[in-house]
Length: 219
Image (cartoon, rainbow, N blue to C red; front, side):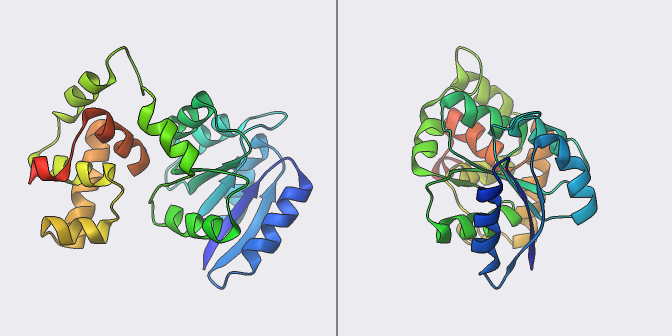
């Protein structure tokens, strides 16, 4: 079972999400929080695998709550589910450590699948959000150059894995395409995240896209 914590300041939204996710055989809502300042205690109490996080809340917003979780060892994956999808909202949330970003008009089945992907550390982005991520600069006047310079710290194999992550591939496909074992892919991915001081593969995917990495170029 994938344990889910719902964080939203609207009780009707929390109730609807609990009802929806409760219908899935492999998902279990273990707790709720009504504001970002309640998240640390709720996570400590319920030990969720995934936190379904709203952005706009009264006391502590979802970006700050996500950043606070990302700084903790063994933190759960954060999947943002919100009404807002401005460039600043999207990039701030992903930089804070969110593994995915969905808007609230996403179909229930897609939200359930995104929760499963988040539990595996895989990104999920609503179509409009994905377009913003691809087109938006992620830092500095020349993000492509800065991303390329940062990625230079990686070995050839780590760069290949980073490129595949940037193309949205899961670990199993990366292993098959690059002729590596699954455990080796995980090792390279972990090493890349550590060297680049990144929290998750979504941030690595953004960096790889900025640098224009492709798997073909690194194979």
